[in-house]
Length: 335
Image (cartoon, rainbow, N blue to C red; front, top):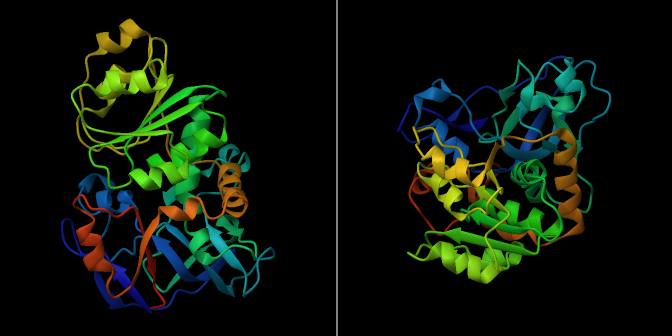
């Protein structure tokens, strides 16, 4: 089969032929239908902290058709369309049994979506209803990440929300915040590339960087935000969140920052700000995200800006290292 392989830090991915996967006990082989390009994959190819080895097949936002099953597989059969929860785990510990595989001691991020076929465990697969496409199935993971952040925030109906960053995760947060009753959902970004898309996902206001940003947002909402979601992942954004959030408000950090960051603790302490981190999701949140795709079509699908072939994917991947007008780019390994 063909797959786009990691060839080293700061090097382009390369499409090569590698052996087809075979399923072991409790595993299935999925013919990948769609895979989203995630900012996390860009980080993995740039930062040695992730420990990615040469010739790894990345890609964790994927869905596809089951084409082979291993011994002991009982819930799935060939021909089933599935969305893959990209969290390998033991499946037996208390966290796994509670539907929280992200916090299993044996958890590893599942890749393979940047190839024509991927092997995964049956327990990681959620069936896609006939009313949804494989494209929909590849959106479930980023939607679930956004949902988990909103759940961790403790958002209440009527809350005023600010989302810093209009990437796929930030827009997913806006989507869930509105669904869960937020009165105002402002999205702020350094560019206005995703402004229309933010409104489509549920934002009530959109702001670009300006000197009076705090005052402008407060005026729009009528007061400072109750909750600020940091969805950028760059140094300085936590400090900016502290500036924005109300006294005794909450900051939820979803942005993946692998660089040192600083902020003045007194600023947060004097406001009694709660800073909450958020990563991954629970299995039940993954299912809720899938259900929302069916109930709210075509709102979440507005995240998708382009679908590329596997052959053209490395060039597109490199282009995404720089700020672009793209939001969620999908890969179709079958083309």
